[in-house]
View 1 (cartoon, rainbow, N blue to C red):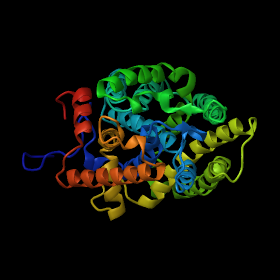
View 2 (cartoon, rainbow, N blue to C red):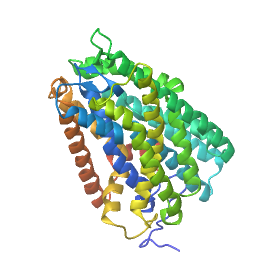
View 3 (cartoon, rainbow, N blue to C red):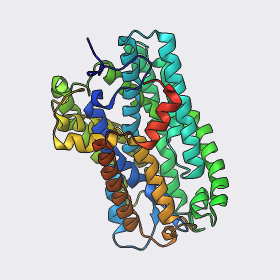
View 4 (spheres, one colour):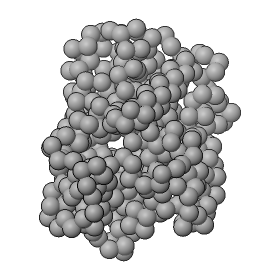
Length: 407
């Protein structure tokens, strides 16, 4: 029984989950993976360079091969699959919570569809106004497909997930081909392939990004379906509350981390060594190495999620006390949309020709430092908002769009 002096802390149906009742492990993983996303995205804001393996800018800076190799080993093709896994986990959490509160399937499905449609809208604004490599639109589009699978049997999920994983591995060949084209005597690929980073004016960049983002979204059924595999894995994990209650699933989480992390690193090794110039990948080997990189990257994403849950330990949703590690990174994870969008705002200001223009001269190593500092800034900002018990601006806007005035 509750009174005016002691309001009911439980969430209402068709309303967002209160931050105090969110599961900490997924939020910690979201906060940490934003660093990987920043590292993976920032090279695309550099322009006027040739592109090499994994679309990495080719520069003369001595530190760049090492930075590229480290990012390729731990972030590229690993961060976005992890984010996709967490997205599938979060969607399933919403469904399970609404069902437990008595919401029927029709209303819950309508809520999930509305949320994904709004995410596509957010992705359109982000992709056109800030960064052609936006992932929100892709996740929203794939999320609509996930709604069709969210109540499917384990057998159906295994079949569809297996097919999607095969597609994810196969599409890695695109990155391998990019490296091959970069070795063509004509001088390789310039960043004209992505015209928006080097556009001289903001209006020209917006017009270029409009075409780039639209093309990327339209191509999702052909090249982006692979990300459905980690989303389905996240769906399955949420059904079993693997990240909600890491203490009860510790043995499985240890197994996933112990196997997945070494596989992820070994799978990235050929690409990393090629980026360092230790080996040279032949015309037949490079696409295979890129496919291996993509496939083991998805496994690495799952291992990262398991590792985050193990670091959280026994903390569960609604716990009154948690360690400083959990509090620090879950604050950003709860505001991951704001953190993600803030990265693009900073990168445009720092690197675009109509900003400070560092994209024309900065090395990959310098750009990576900017990415790390930006992530640290969002971490501090998120914890300030957490201390004030405030949501991130983007989260507040999305929740208002999805749920209206309901709380």
